[in-house]
Length: 296
Image: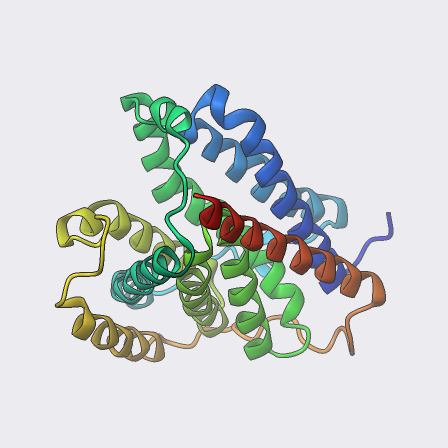
């Protein structure tokens, strides 16, 4: 394998395609046997984190500069946490509205009761909580904001976090079509933080705060229950979005925030092929959900 001085878009697109495919295939095979919580650990460690770390090892990329695995100021850490909670409210509202519209237009998504019974054990719930609040922020941020965003920052920092945020949202079609837009919003927010601070710790804290909010604030505020969103969220969602934008804009700029730019003039053909295949695959996943809803 030819070594590269930094991640390329071809590598990023290939790894993204791999992760999207094996996450689904692995979950279909393993989740009924080991449960949702344990399966999440496999997804995060094996399909998401491992490829990014393996490429860094093979190419001898320093993790602190290439993947931005370094600290940031206490102020930035606090802002990241607050922005994660604030933008989660907007994302949760978008998710509720998306599910409501899909249910009305195409029917309710059928539920796999057998899989739910395995996942509902206390052991699986503990694994799920740790996986969502600890593992996902670490593993997914290393892959998306550390690896993929660094590759796309070769064109520009803004291009890097926008494209990576959209890819992050598209990846979440595996959790349902209604999650694509909310995850994209969160992904762009996390990408902006990394671009601005030059530190992956900011997006990890944002990610952890958002997932922790989903676990605890969601049920408490009625955002996890079935049905339409609570009436107060029609005002809270845009207010939270504005607050999150103000918080994100207030973070301190840090050295190294601009990433690696100027390394590629355009994406090579093989990179375009990998990205095209991934888009077609994820579109197929979304279409399959719509078909399943229509058949219900």
